[in-house]
Image (tube, rainbow, N blue to C red; front, side, top):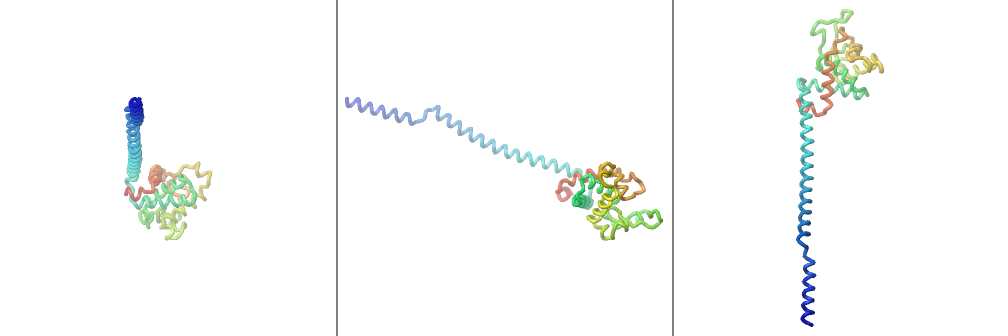
Length: 218
């Protein structure tokens, strides 16, 4: 009896120890779960990395396209265009008005802040026969302001915007084609003089929507 009891206890203890050891199926499931967790973690890291890389590639492609659009313009020209845009924005005027101003400066000076004008280049006179005194981005004559004001890009732009708002007020301005707006402000001999510059002005304003274009493309 005693022997059987002892053996019984040994067998009982052996069964208890067997229950504490995980079965092969349980261990296998746990290994698979750990591997799955590691795989998911790696996949997450790769996804984040690929996502960042994708964003960077997209930004690089966009920037290259913007630089291509800026091709053909000098730094000074784009700097002057940005100043014109800034002056219009500061005046609370919409992008269309800013683009009209850029178009006008393109037609007058090719966006160059020159200190001479039509009289010096072609002997052009005013209707009364007097010499023209136009200078600066917008080729503004003496009546627009002092020489210093007309040769300061921001001030010259502000003078143009003020005249545009006064000469072609809203809502008429929004309903008037850009070259006519510019002509009514500048009083050019050819009312359609500025029309060819409108697509180019739109392109420049679009390019300068990227604030880094001047420093990174030129």
